[in-house]
Each structure stands twice: as C-alpha cells, then as structure tokens.
Length: 152
Image (tube, rainbow, N blue to C red; front, side):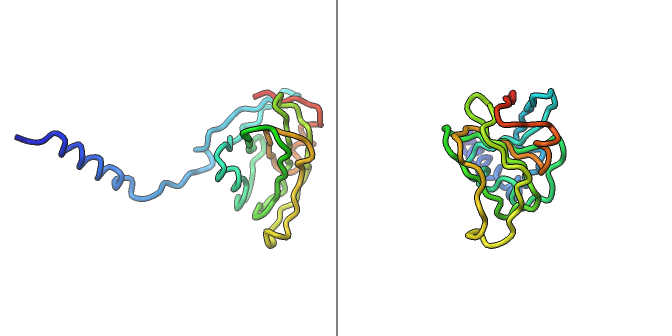
C-alpha cells in the first residue's frame, strides 16, 4: 500500500526547487498606495514598512517618475532623520505626523555618492510617523507646504 504522506513530503521538498532561485522584485511589484495631495493630484507611492526596505529606500535607483513616490511608514511617531547615501537623484523628502499633516520638507535633497560617514542627514526636527519621498522639485510643483494634509 502506498503511503500518502510520502507524496506530500516529496512535494514539499521539491516545490522550492521549482522556483529556481530568488525572484527579482521589480518597481511595480511593491504594494502601492494612492496619496491624494491638497490640490487633488494623486501620487502612487511604494509603501515601505519592513526595516530592510526602509533602509534601502531609493538607493541605487536611477529615476523616480513623476506621479510616483515612496511612502515610509514608521512603527511610532518620532524625529526621523533621512540621508541620501547611494541615492542617485535629488529627492523631496516630506515628513508627516499621525494625522498626515506635513510637519517638515527637505526640497531637492542632493544625492550622496561619497563614503557613508560623509553623507549629511536631513530632517528629523519634528516628530513624524510617515515620510514621503518624491522626485526633486515635485513638492514645489504640487504646491506642498508645511501644514498641508495629505490623504491616504
């Protein structure tokens, strides 16, 4: 008589091999969230929640298309400074409190391609829960200001 558990065990052992290695994650495969700006414009942002993804952020990416961004969701409100180590393009960094009200903006934050120890930090002067990164100049183009509230 055939053992039904043997087939299950073999399937469990062979199934991971069918993937043939780690999968490369593309920009469109991250969870995206629509963010409505005060002027009614909508930005689609990748949501970063895991520590590793938050640390990597925009590092090594060549572009951030108009209308797209990256939303960092911290576990608790706090004064989070960001840096631009290994980021290739200028970014607008927008800090928001728990009510999604903008508390700080670092516009056209320059990339830092030198040693990590020489890269300055930006922001972190106000408590924030969310941080939105947009391409450099986008905050001005959208007319974003401290005190504005975003919807998501």
